[in-house]
Image (cartoon, rainbow, N blue to C red; front, side, top):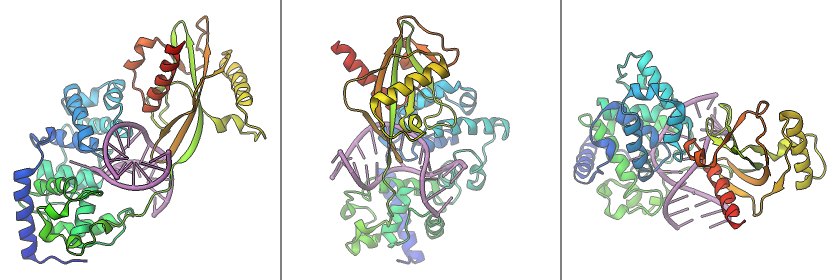
Length: 373
DNA sequence: TAGACGTGGTT
DNA sequence: TAACCAAGTCT
């Protein structure tokens, strides 16, 4: 691992910030240093690319222009604004934190990274990003870019998939952060990490900090950072029920305990749940019979199920791969949902609800088949 | 600590 | 296609 002298650190800061001032990106959340703007953008940018975030950020600020507006927002509006961005707990935590700010902090922002971490959804990276960009605290914001950039510049061998590695990087980067412009320094590292020093197809040859890049000097750019792999997602089979009546489609809101909490979808039944007793043969016909029986006894709904043509619909999450086999049922007369926690939604109004991607895929399949009839 | 937690883009 | 990546946090 490389060690930089005080002189080298000075030169690095100067080179980096000169490049940033000249070539840094003009992004909507960089127009000012308002902590609300910085905060919302940082949350949206977690595990999400800049180009994806931009339109969401602009719509979000139009809909929820202040911390107070966010704190008081209707949750359905919030989830709808976040639809498609993923990691939906970010949206729920954002609102909870806004309520913390209003009620516990009386609208006065905490100004240090240590205090900012008390806000729900604000971890070590985001706290340092807000503290440095909005309040000028001299701390490194160690995200994936900072891990990659400094691992390469300094040939740091630690596995960045290990949580404890963050502390090592914090300790190493802390003395390098420009004490005059910590926010600009941190954002410059991110811009570097998403341009010349990307994970794939980097261009270290033309990097403004090439002279400081030990991995380039050694011809080992792609050896850094060191990162162990995560296990493959597990396949989870579901049945998705397209149930229609004169009142529309039967939709259910996912509970707070489930993935995609608060979002709406057709009823989704894990196939394993139908076979808990360990029946030898798990045929489609057997599962349909079990489903029909369960809905009759549990919900007083008499389903006549029909398989929907086509292969199961697949959707891959970070840790699971859902394979949804669609089944349909139609009621000539709209039955009561007194014993079922869902609602009938007219076709034209479905889009007003917050919907996850898997629901859009199911609707698309159904619409395609519907047209062919 | 390791696994849960979404989606879109690239190779 | 499968695998991996993208401004992480929570439990």
